[in-house]
Image 1 (cartoon, rainbow, N blue to C red):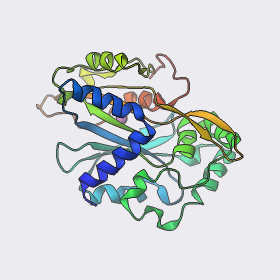
Image 2: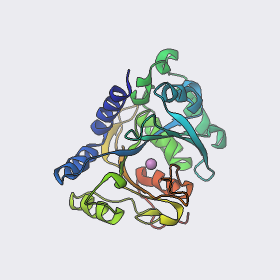
Image 3: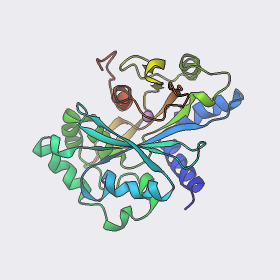
Image 4: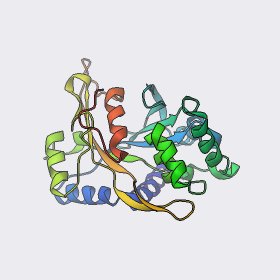
Length: 273
Ligand code: NI
């Protein structure tokens, strides 16, 4: 699979879960913009056959290179940023939940899920949009995970796929600030994630980011109970050049921490970072 096929398949799966993303992209294209994605983000568990270390070889095989590790203490995550083989391709942000830091009951729910993954499931790069590789959890299991980790609860029902794509604001011509981008998105009737402020980061940290609130859809839990859940969202990023004139390539942990809350059912307003 070449890298264009990889991203085409990843995008198709993502917009099936996230209709707002196609709507946003279509609106900017209609305004005469060319869309370049700054990065794509994935979530996984550090258990079973789908750990970060097990998924990473697919990125490396596509020509990605490791850039920097990140740690999110409060959200119990570790992550790695990867640089693409060419500048017009998105960076990749791959995070995993540190399951050891959850309670034993929550860990046993996660173990029950990942134990169902067929050993062959991770052999192909398509594992990155395979979705849920296990039976749906019960609503009680989902709620138990939610009490400790929104990330774990989301992953238990959504599975492996792009959690978000990110429009590069640098590549836009008329909508060249985050404020302009968010105003355009709100005209479409979509909501912006308010956690940590609408725009996270600043020119001083060389990266500004914002995101929509995730799309919602009905989900059928094991046993037949149905509830509305969060799927995926779209992010927007503007990068600045550093003192050496180089465009910043990293991620700002304090900002990413709040971006994670785009899939929260009730995002916190201006949560401390
Ligand atoms: Ni992101």
